[in-house]
Length: 319
Image (cartoon, rainbow, N blue to C red; front, side, top):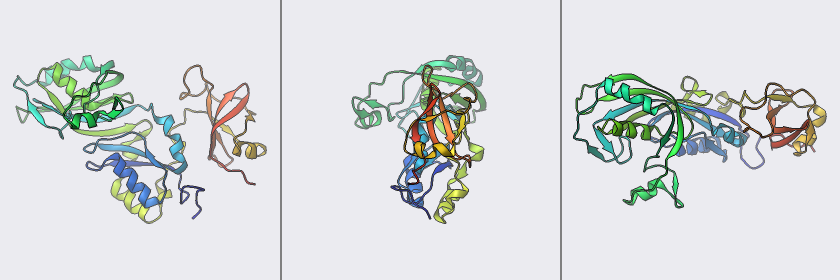
């Protein structure tokens, strides 16, 4: 098998895994690293150990594409349990029952409008947010309350899809949530319970979408383990630029290959396709994907005054 210059076997691409409850996102990355022999492996957004669902794993040179997915919208299916508060805002924390009337389905429905659109949200005490150079969960585990500033997030949609009041002391609601990156569904559950004066915590969570990656196309962890262990990673991998179709493609001329491989500026020989790059911030030079004759990613580059300025190069000089 061909090898990367510094990264073991040549395996580059995106592996979309359906994470089960139990392992951490880091555990999944470590497993993929061990089974492939590739050192450079990362994921596209942490899932708590008890949470399930879509976990995009970026392997080899594909790790350089993670930054283009940092702002990806997420979608979740969540179960929220009322009647108690949790120290971690989820089922793994210490529970404090709330002696107050429990909400009805109608009460919950009426409260949802306050959580739709742009909202201010304080992250959970047990989160990886940095506070004075430390992680918030490190502060919380020592018995102190971290001082966390509210963050602005966007709840694009929040719909109540199920209600279970079989336990009158712990009624449970099921929600479908579509939100911006950086949203904590645990905080959403906590704040909903506070608004209803009943307390609430997150009882279950499944991420159904992470940007372009969806749960119905994700691979079960057991299948991933078997496939990688038998050296058939290529059967599961998506190309490194998967999900970035909004970024225009520019074909690479053979005459420009060596210059591009050396990171040099090359000319834009075709009209810039489309309106430009949705991933480039307003006011910045448009971003394009330069692809070779086989349609494989050769580089990411910014367009400036009719020239292509490479920012990430994925091909090597032939000499």
